[in-house]
Length: 444
Image (tube, rainbow, N blue to C red; front, side, top):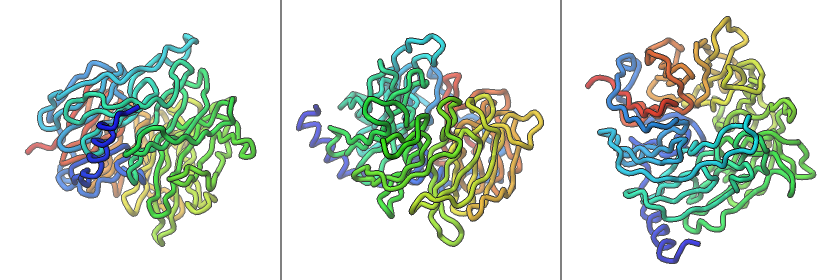
């Protein structure tokens, strides 16, 4: 349990926490609605995006699947070796590092090996919150990296893992619990952590007691206007009467986590591992109708009404399969810049040999405004700002004109990127599976 001194310190830090600066990228997918849109970006545009060059490169010597969170001139990011870093955004120098755990080695040798941090951090006042590789949320001192508290959410020895990142809303943090690699499956849950009183966290279990499935390996989105949290769940049976919420899009009260509405993925399959692939994105039509969208491993983008999760429209972006990294389905959460949705995916039905695709989509009816085929599969969420679309692929970063899909830039030799490009203060930050963090910037 956290002692009274630390509890008071956390409360004061929260009370004094400033509003995120314009140059910050404060959490996964930028904001609680998951827009992935930095409206304040003005230094990089279509006129100079083609001239990006490395401003600095920092090698952390371990695979990186989490994007950095940018706060107050520092990039916070974790690696698959279990280490978590604070990096100076001006120099690329490491300010501190802290070990925040790894998953347990699975019993089955063919399962996914134990890894460290995939969850993206967020900063509240003087505290950095991150989901560790050992299925616990760590509270770290922002300036030193020293551990203030560790909140276990699942037992990694049973197969639990935190793929989900932390969404900050109304002085609370939200994230999901899932399994490391579905071998074995675990009992999934949505968790709410009160920043002022972190323990005990509130759990909403998504499988019956003693059951498995319904893991949240995506990240919750929040509608502040209705105090509603939206999540997408993974593999498991679909039976609301018994509390089995596999392959579901759920709307829950953000305070109590009571389920208010649901939509089951029509193609959900436990046998074939077809489930939701992306986190939800909140957006609205040109007439102001509030919708929520997510993409399944079936390659279909589904847009639902936010009030009751009834279908509004859907559009097919890629072939169905159980292996998005192989080039099908999608786990790339859409972005919304206020008038257009953008989404990445695997192999398009229109492709010849291309393994990836990216789309601009009309939010009113799902019609495709433009599409572009890419040689690399798109795993990470796309990012948009100042008329430019940033697309991380399994063969490197690609930059497009948001209005037309015209290629503006690509980063040359192939490199695998699983994380979202982060746009902040005239730089694009990318983490790569070769262990490098790269800050890209146009020439000054």
